[in-house]
Image 1 (cartoon, rainbow, N blue to C red):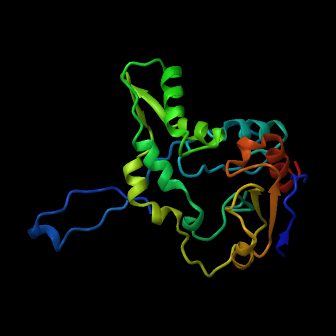
Image 2: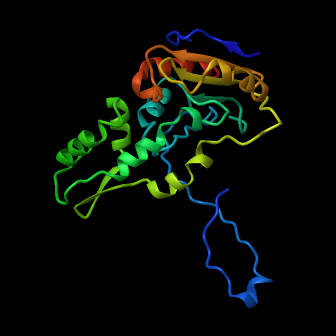
Image 3: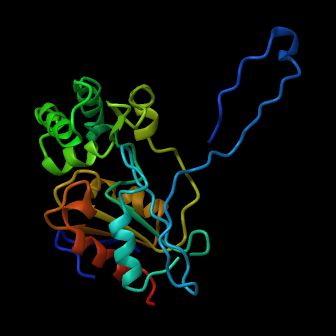
Amino acid sequence: MLRRLPRARATAPPWRLRPRPPPAAAATARSVVTAVQLAHAEVGGRGDRPPLVLLHGLFGNHSNFQAVARALVRRGSGKPDLVERLISVDISPISAAPVSEFSAYISAMKSLKIPDGLPRSVARQLADDQLRPVVQLPQLRQFLLTNLVEVEGRYIWRVNLEAISHHLADITNFPTFHKPYPGPALFLGGSNSPYISSKHYPEIQRLFPKAEVQYIEGAGHIVHQDKFEEFITAVFNFLPPP
């Protein structure tokens, strides 16, 4: 049963591009699909505990949840059946396009101008200043700036902004599913974020009949960054006991 909690502080297809075959071979060419090796980081836990897999979102990278992972390991969470239980952090099983500001963020990131050879601290401050008119929340700017990297004295974005901008509608869309997920699920949102709304509850309940919805007071979209301890507590309370 879906439990709609008040907005209060929480207490408790990969593919690879291949050259087009010449016309003579087109009739016999076969599609080849290969798995993509994902960048990841592993934090050790107790061997008798099921794994807890943390997946970052758009503009994220495998380092985003390092502090969260270490905190959960310290509190007794280890490395479920596939999947024994699910936590969705500030996103609903619907298209995010109506509330997404990603297009504006991408445009601001693409228009960034940083001279070559600057010290990293100076470059980040300059980038922060240029993003501020569009990305007004300091926490969100700092999150985006984790993607700014130095390569041979030049500052570039590690994420493929062109690919993201061309396929943003596909990324923010949610496919139609008819078979529900039968396990426990927690939709954990920030009280200041629009990504989990009461109008999403019917679809959450349809696809996740054992879901509960919980909000962390004062948090925006990047919940674990805005309210770290409250986030850890909510996650740990939802996981099976050690």
